[in-house]
Amino acid sequence: MLGAYHGLDPSMGWLFAVGLGLQERRRSKVIAALFPIAIGHFISVALVVLLIARAMAQSWWFLRPAGALILILFGIFRIVKPQAHPRWVAMRVSWLDLVLWSFLMATAHGAGLMLFPVMMKIPSCYAAAHQHHQHLLMMAASNNGLVGSAAVVLLHTGAMFMVMGIVAMIVYEWIGLQILRSAWINLDMIWAGALITAGILAMVI
Image 1 (cartoon, rainbow, N blue to C red):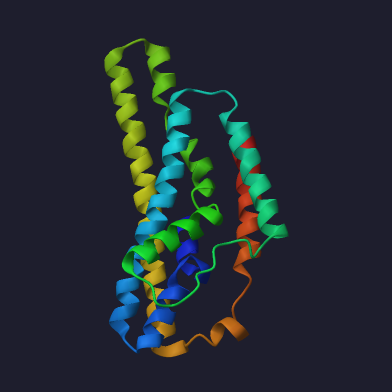
Image 2: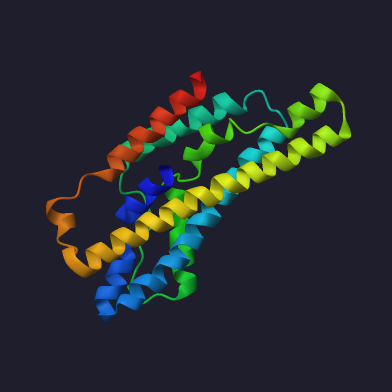
C-alpha cells in the first residue's frame, strides 16, 4: 500500500515521466522514464532499510523510540515545509539524471523511513543468536532478516512502479496534466500525516 501510494503521488515521478513524453510527443519516452525513476526510488528505500536492518542486528534498545521519533518529527517538518524537495532545472535529462533526481526526491520525502514499522516486525539476528546461543540459528535468523528486508524493498518498489506506470499512461493518453490544476488532492499533507501516524504506531505496537 505504501508503494502504491508513492506510485500515485505525482512528485515521486509519474508527473516528470508524463512531462517528458508530452514534450517529445512520444509514448515510449514516458515508459522509458519510468525505469530510472523506479531505480532511484529503489536505491533510496534500500539504503534506509539496510541501515534499519543493521541497527536491528545490534539490538539497540533505543531503535524503536528513536525511529518513531524521527518519523513524527519528519512528518511535522513535511507539514511546516511541504515544498522542501529537490527541483530540477530543466526537462532535458539523461537516464542517470532521472535516477539521481528520483533518489533525492524519495529521500527528501522520507520514503524509506515509512518502512520503519514494517522492519520492526522482521526477526533480528542478534536477538535470535543470544537467545539460543547456536551458530546455525544465528545464521538462519540473519538470512531470514536479509530475505525479509529484500522482500520489503522489492514489494514496495514493485507496487510503486506498477501504479506509477498505470497513472502515467492514463494521464498521458486520456486526461492530460490539467487534472493537477482542477481535481488533484494535496498528497503532501496526507503523506505528512501518514508519517506522524506511522511514528505513533511504531512506538505503541
